[in-house]
Image 1 (cartoon, rainbow, N blue to C red):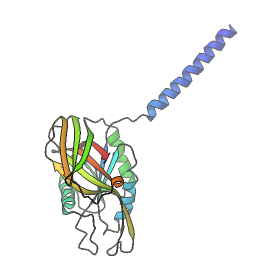
Image 2: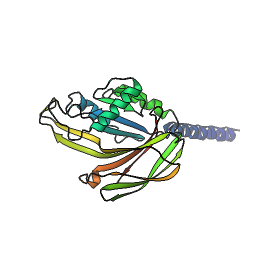
Image 3: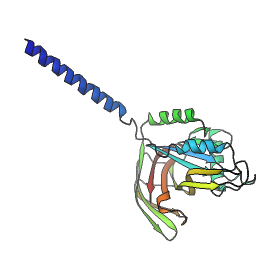
Image 4: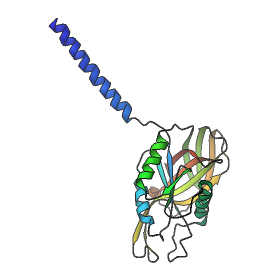
Length: 248
């Protein structure tokens, strides 16, 4: 009888350990395959932007998060011309402002095309990401082969799922830049920026399955300091449904 009680006790202990281990493993597994795109509209001429730049930079190593730094050009006339600024990036920010009924300012962060906030608000960013990762992706995008040729990067990629009425955004990024700022609100500072968008293009239509596209390639980008990001965005509400990043 004692032997039977001992065997039952050991069995219960083993089951308890297995159950706890399994529960912990399941809890630590990612709940979603969604990828979040953080589009930060910033400028080296804006004194309130460096804290946002640093905060968003902390997400460059996070799983399922891809930050993109779009440097706008409307600060360029105020003492310092941002070497990474583009009028096209300013226009993209105005597009979001119109769609989201928000103001245009820096640093402004748009999360997955539909959530707007101050780029240095860590709590709001975390809340937005938790919401996104509680959902399941209804589309997928995978980058295949990339090849540089004649001043362009040719990209092979595959998409599936709900991709109707979606556009494809292509962002060529410089992973890290260091700039001594000589004038303007940040004059005298040396600013480090991450995932700076150096070239950007929108393709109006993609097909299910294998696709090919290309984007202009700034030859000054070093091999170890560049990536290409592709992300699907719905035309109706700007929702970003899938994304992928690849070094090249």
